[in-house]
Image 1 (cartoon, rainbow, N blue to C red):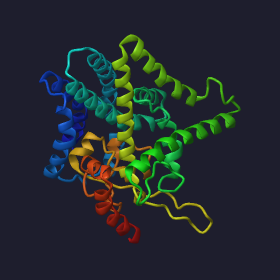
Image 2 (image 1 turned 135 degrees about the vertical axis):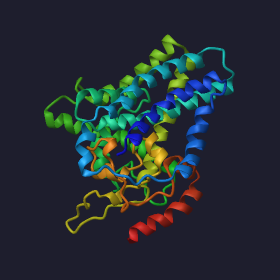
Image 3 (image 1 turned 60 degrees about the vertical axis):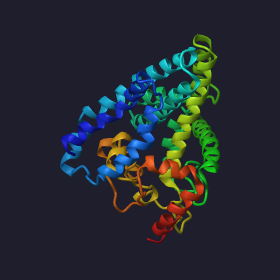
Image 4 (image 1 turned 45 degrees about the vertical axis):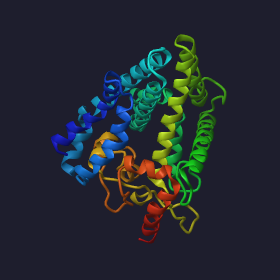
Length: 346
């Protein structure tokens, strides 16, 4: 990895900054234009990034504390901006259309924060997992840390995984199946853990009880300490943020399937069971989340170590370009289904 690319990862933190800039210039849709228009266009200009860490670089990259600066800094930025945004939306200063723009911009930020939470949630040390839980609490999706690590990574690209989209399934049907199915799966996984350890299912050690109650406590605090509009904002931004996550889930595994072996077990997870995208700019903004094939093949690797995998199914664009396609099912099916068939036959 070049030093230029290393420093470029700090670009991620400018998303909270661009929200403040939009507010100061009196146009709270500024951040949305950058994320959904400017970045997809810039992806076409800057092109692809097929560079991978060399074996000689891996050790140094894995120990380099620089790569923690941006994700750690993101956490207080996101929490501070959400509190500030709730207060601004509660105040009778901004016109309604500007409040909507601010709320949507903050929701996209907190949705992107789930990517940071995903990175922290794969770590074994307590402090990084705590940061993941703080970010997930701010979008009412704390069960993700259980279901994603213990459920999705085990069952990915199978009919048992609520977070793997099936071919022909539109995003809206997938959203309903994934949101409800992931929450139920997290409960089953947590109850199984408690039984294995001999703990009470309804005691204080049950993480799912905390993960369900904490967002309600945050919502109550918004209402009692700030006001009704702050409560509505918290609920709405949570909905948009975790829907953004589900949109990413939809794109990452759509139509890809693991085959069953002769003994009835699924084949091991490989780099062919997730879509890969190697657009330079969007991969920087998403801390290599688009190198999702390698993430599923090597889930313990930190983001700076993930590689582009040419043998994986390749998306025709970065996630920013795929979002609008996925939201219009006929367009999505027309473009992606032929690619699914191509990789199934390969």
